[in-house]
Image (tube, rainbow, N blue to C red; front, side, top):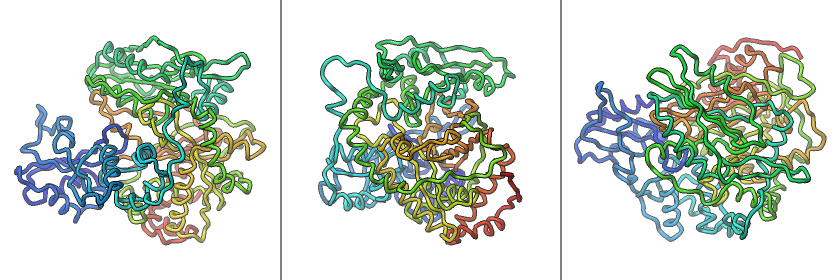
Length: 630
C-alpha cells in the first residue's frame, strides 16, 4: 500500500477535495506515523473521516492524524510544498480521543504514552500502533514506567499490550522496579578520573586494536542536500554538539597496567573538510575512498566532510562504533538539524562516561549478571556452527572483507508482512526474523539456528538523550523444525525474541566465555546477523536532505551474512552484506531469490509446514536450481 493509494482513498471520502499523506517522525523519537492532510470545509469531522478510511485501509495504513486545511501549500512550480505542511501537534495537538482513564494507573500511563508519542487526547482503548508505537517507543516507555511508577515493566510487556487499558491491567500485579536511574553510581562526588569502557565498548575496542587498518566498525553517514549550505554554520553547530555530548570528545587511553579507559577531553577542535567536486564526479566512490580506519587512542573518533558540486552538496560523516550506534546516529542527526534550524536541543541527563561507570560498576554488573540464568538455559547444550553452503573454503582466521546486495521487498509483500504481524499480535520484526531463520534452516539443513540481533539498550532510565554505544547483541537460538507451520514458527520466534529482549543486559562477552574454546574462523556464537533498522534516520529532515547510513562504503562485514532491513512506511528495503572470502555475488543473488520466495509463501499460506514451503515458493516465484561444492 503506497501513500498515493491512501491519498486516493482519502480524496474519495465525502467532503474531501484533495489529500496528501506524509510519514512523520515522533518528537524526540525514531518511531514513525502517518499524517493525512485533507482539503475541505472547516467543519469536516476528522474522526468520521478516519472511521470511513478504516473501512478501506488496513489498520496500520489509516493515518494517525488527519488535519483539515483550506488549501494545500504549493511551491512556485505549482507542486504540493510538503515541507510547509504543519506538524500535527501544531495543527491540532490532539488524538481523536476515546474512553477516559478509570483510575490513577491508567491516567499515569496515558500521560506517559502521550508524552512519548507527542500527542494529546489519547483514549485508554485506542490502538497505540496507530500513533506510531513500536519497538523503540516501547523501550522508552518501559524505562519511564520504571522511573516514574517504580514498577517492573519489561519491554515485552509493552510490546504485547495493544492499548493503555491492556498495559494497565498487566501492570496491576507488577513487582516494584528492580533498579532506578543511573544514580548514585553515575554521579559520584568529587573529581573523576578516566571512566572504564562500557561492556558494549570493550569487545569493539579489542577487535579494533587487533586490526588497526580495519574499517568494519566505521559507521558512515551521508546526506545529499538540494542546496550548498554554509560551511561555517555547519561547523559552528557541530561544535555545539561536540560540547554537549562528552562521548564526541572521547578516545581510549591505557593505564600503567595496560587496561583501557575512556578519556574525555574538556575541549576538542572541530574540523569540517571542504571539497569541491566536478559535476560529473561520483560522490559514492569519493565517500568509499574517504572512509578510513580510526585510531581509537586519538580523538576525535569521527570526521566530517562537505562535498560541493554545482547547485547541490553532500554532507558525509564517518564515526566509530565505539562512540555511537543506530539510535545515537538518529539522535545526532536530529539534534544537528534542529540546531541548524535555530532550536536548542535539551541536554542529556547523564553523559556516556557516567553510564559506563554505572554499567561497569557493582550495581550495573549485579543487574546484568542477574539475567544470566535465561542464557544458561538457552545454551545448556553446545551450539553447532551454522553450516551454510559456501563457494570458497573458509579461511582459518575470519576475514572481514565484504560486499553488499540491496533489494526492495515489493509493496504488496511489505503490506502482507505487516498484516500478518497485526493478525498474530507480533511486530513486523518478528515476521521478518521468522522468515530469515526459516531460510537459514533450509540453507544449512539444520533445525538449530543461532542468529545475532541488536537491541537498543535504551531501556534504562536516564539515557534517552545520551549519545553513545548502548547496543547489545542478542544471540537468539531458534528451531525452524521442518514439520512446523510458519505460523507456529513465528509464534516461537516472537516468544523467544521478546524473552531475550527482557534479558538484554547480560554481556555478550560473558556468553562467549561460557561457550568455551573459540573457533577463530568464525564469529563467536553466530555466523549471521539480522536487524530491522527502524530508528527513523531516513525520516530526519536535514536541510532538505535525508540522512542515510552507508555501510557499503566500508567494504567490510563482521559476519558471513548480515541482513539489515530498513523499515519505512512505503515498504521494506533489504541490505545484505556478505563475506567475499566465502560467497560469490551470484550465490547471494540466489539467496535473495530464495528468501523472497519464502516470504511470499509464508504470508500467502502461513499454516503451511516449513518443509513444504519450497513447493509453495515454486508456485509464487521461480527460483533457479543451484548446487554447491563443499
